[in-house]
Image 1: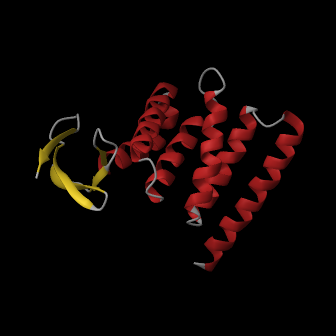
Image 2: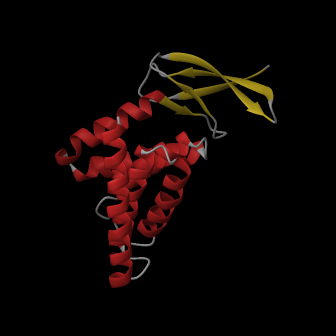
Length: 174
């Protein structure tokens, strides 16, 4: 409702302020900048400002990638980027890779990340990306069909088999 919209706008304003203060103190590539950018990305995504979310989350992930090890907030930032990429119909292959990387990082961090890990697992179970990078199915069944469009023409069909722990994507030429 209206209160949620106001809360998201307020959060966005606070993250913008924190970002400016941190950039002034640490410079543009410090991990604390990435943490503020992730918060800003989450606020943008909550407001359905998906293009803005992708932009700030891309910057955050680039900062994380420039530092050794896993930084505070990095796994959540990667997962939020994955969700934003799917919401904007962006690079779905990258979205899936970022979500998997976030999952792996959360798993390494241990039991304190159990609820976040469960959220990523649930998201991954509902989103399938085939090797060509197309997100072709979101849902809960073990088998599904999806069509991949190239230049607005249906070029192939994929059969999804999620009956095992691995997800397989079998191409079939139409």
